[in-house]
Image 1 (cartoon, rainbow, N blue to C red):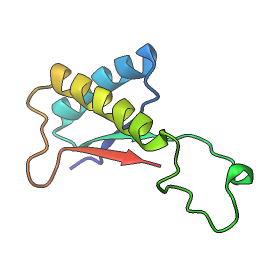
Image 2 (image 1 turned 120 degrees about the horizontal axis):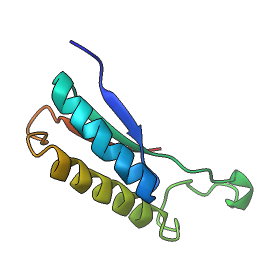
Image 3 (image 1 turned 180 degrees about the vertical axis):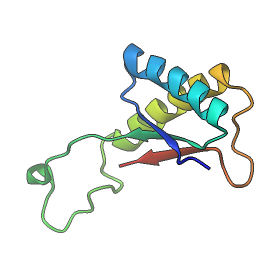
Length: 95
């Protein structure tokens, strides 16, 4: 069994095209597809003692979740047989 197919997503047209290619490759391999979104956030802008991902995230969580949801939909459109039944084939990870 091969490892997962991992694709980085930033919401751009080129990253969504990469999601389609990755979904097709995951389907061909019978592998898990992992969608990953990462962004830089300077701790210099976080008050001492504040959580890095808390209620004051100023829309970061919705932005990341929206980016991953769009990528997940694109993956399902390209490879409908990839789904997230128990033991998910598509995993979303926000870093």
